[in-house]
Length: 190
Image (cartoon, rainbow, N blue to C red; front, side, top):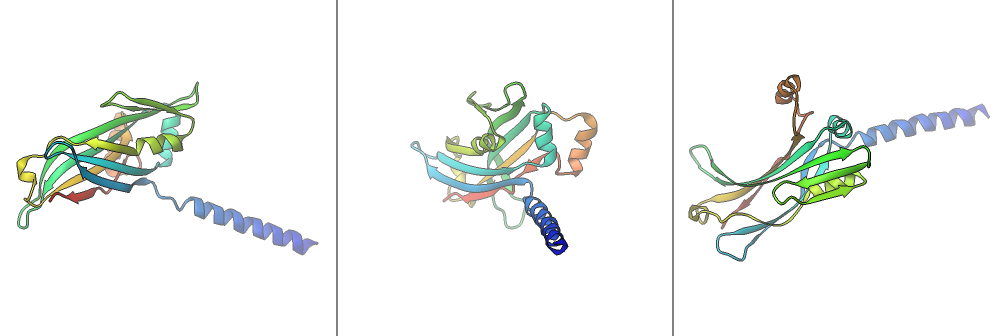
């Protein structure tokens, strides 16, 4: 009987250890699940579709539940590649949104700042899914020198607290705990 209890105890300890390591295997960050670019109806315009996955740090999750507003920015730019000097970059557009939690209604509110659209969700997963979904977003007309000149469309994403107090602003410069930033993707312009 004591061997059965000892075996169950050992199995329970192993199971707890395995679950804790499996749960900690998710690293915080922003990753691109999908990215597509098509030509728009008017000349020199592009239409993008972006799918993002967000894995928040514990600091951002706790801050969100304690009243912190998170600001998300999807930035589109042009980059011209140079073989012997630095690459030239130009900003095209940004899509900004804010995510906050309302404790009285227990709802996550997502507001897209450029269009004024807002959504409410009962779970953080659903709010992050909507925030990471940008469909049929038309970019402004590209300049003439973007075509046939070794230029690429560059997309990057940053999620950070809307405001940080002074000691945390300094710490945020040296730590990725307070904000998440994607690697970015490039799409060559023909």
